[in-house]
Structure formats: C-alpha cells, structure tokens
Length: 108
Image 1 (cartoon, rainbow, N blue to C red):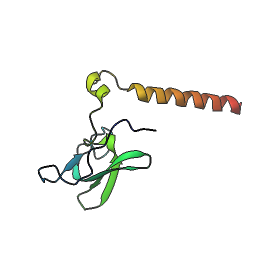
Image 2 (cartoon, rainbow, N blue to C red; image 1 turned 90 degrees about the vertical axis):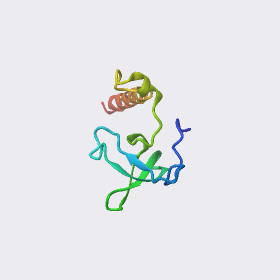
Image 3 (cartoon, one colour; image 1 turned 180 degrees about the vertical axis):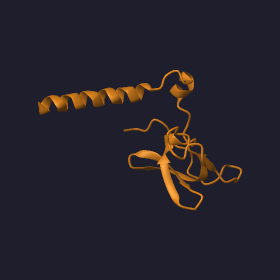
C-alpha cells in the first residue's frame, strides 16, 4: 500500500550543518515534550519511524507521527481541535468493528 506522506530526509543535520533535534509530541507518551538528538527516519515494522538518541546515547525509535519530524496532517491543522478523530482512522475503526462482529457471530 502506498504511504500517504513522505518522511523528511534521513540526515543528521539541517541544511546549515546544525544538529537536528526531534521532539516527542504524542500527548500520552511519557516522553511528551522532551527533545532528543535526531538520527534518521526509516520504514520499520510496517510504518515510518524516527530514530534518535536519548541522554545516555541509547538509540530509540518512535512512530513518525508521534514526533515533530512528521509533516503536519492537513485534517488536524484544519480541524484545530474540533474533531478528535481523522476520517481515515474512523474508517479503519469501522472495518475493525465489522470484522469483530462477524467473528463474534461465528462463535455463537
């Protein structure tokens, strides 16, 4: 399946040679708001992930969308907090509910 957005370049510095920092933006992640040394963006485990180093130099990764390295989602920008769900996510949820309902009916 084609990806909906392209990750940013997987370089370790901005165009001016400065070290890149990545911030965790997911509101429920324990590291929300923390900044780390950006390493790269790669496609692992079926999704785009950001790789970074913590304060101890240990390499970690998080989904791209959980950081400020992700492109701004157009829907999120336009909704400005008025809708907690994206249409694509609701479609996936509806499909899951249908599959679970069918599985439950087969078990009866």
